[in-house]
Every structure is written in C-alpha cells, then in structure tokens.
Image 1: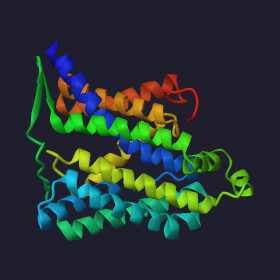
Image 2: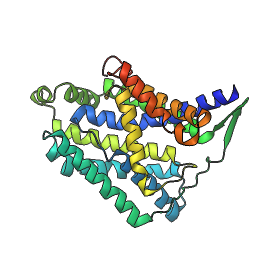
Image 3: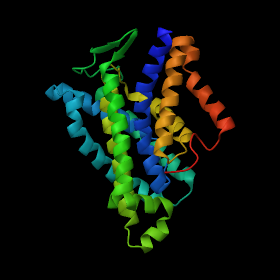
Length: 287
C-alpha cells in the first residue's frame, strides 16, 4: 500500500510540472494556431542556460530563473516575430516543418556549445526530503507542484481579469473580429508566444534539481507536452493541468508496478485509451 501512495504522490508532483509545460503550448495554440514542435528544445535551452549560469556564477536554478525568464521571453518574441509570424495562415504542415527545423537548430546548437555528455545543475534543495509516514517526498517536487498550480491559477486570473487577457481571449475566439474592434492581433500573438516560452524557463528551473540533462532530451519533453495538451482539449487550462496529472500518475505507476521498459509505455497506453473513448479530451469546453 505504501508503494501505491508513493507512486500517487510522485505522479501528482511530476504531473503538475508536465501541466505547466503544456500551458505554454496550449496558450500559443489558442491564439495563433501554431503547434510548436520545438517546444521541448526550448525547455532544454532554458535548462542549459541555468547550467551555464551555475558554471559561471554558481547560481542556483531557483535564482538563475530571474535571468532566464526575461531572456527566454525575448527569444520567444523574436522567434515568433521573424520566423513563425510570416508563416501563420499558410498550410499547417509548413509551420510544422519550420518548428521541426527550429528544433534541430536548437538541439545542435546546444550540442556544439555544451557537448553531448549528460550534465547536472546542482541545487540547494535537490537532496532535501519530506517524510510523511511511509511516503518520502522530494522537496524539489513539492516546490514544483506548488509553483505549477500557482502559475496556472495566475494565468487563469490574467485571462479573465486583465485587458491583455481579454485581448488574448478575443483573438482566440475570432481574430478578424478582434482586429475590427481595434486589437493589434499581431502584437497579441507575439506577446502570447513570448509568454508561452517564458513559462518554459520557470518549468525548466523546477525540473532541474536532481535531473540529468542532455541536448537530445527536447523530443521527449515535446512528446509529453503534446500528450498533455491533447488530453486537456488543446486550450482548456483546467483540462491541461488535469492531463498533466494523468500522464504523471500513469508514468509513476508504470515505473513502480511494471518493468522498466514496459513501464515507459504506460502513459502512452493510457493516452490511447482515453482518446478512444473521449476524443474531445478530458474537458467538455475550451476556456
């Protein structure tokens, strides 16, 4: 029984971080219709930025995030403004090919700068544990879960209660009508993509403590993010966080109760089963 509670706790904490990864993609897709297949490589870029800052200035990832957030946000704005925006409105596959090419550029750029060996960024919390009865929790996972849900709530409030949030919702519902009402659609799309990439800087810092990183890990994060976004109904924040929990818990259960190789397939099997019986995802309406 203790193994079950341990797996559930592990799954919830990891799944909440997966949900945070997917919020950025869902936000961007809702406004511009772009599915960013370089999503995971932007996460890798943020992680290696934290590694570089630790190597140069001995900054903990939780501190270096103060630098990586504005840098990643600026990179996101430039990428959308000069690479993706000219392609929006063309065939979907053209945008997919562009983001896949961007993925290869980021991956190989990281490889040339940092090499191909796995690396690790130390953190003050990576070895700290919280013991609740038979359940042992890593403090880093607890922090990641709390921050992920806090940011999800913050984004929800921003969308509902601020002028920028209402502009995002207007563009999501009908970009042409939003433009007729005086909203600068292009500016909203650039800022939303930048915000989505900035969120990844936070997620990267939360995932780093105790996690080995390597330049080729981007595809893994992209696939997980796509699973979560599709489960959540693409644009529904509640559904996306719920989808993250489903993937996180199924991954933890597979690790505990199934062999190492087959255990990695459990989240994908759960995803296929849910899509077979509920193709619209885990929620009934978009946010």
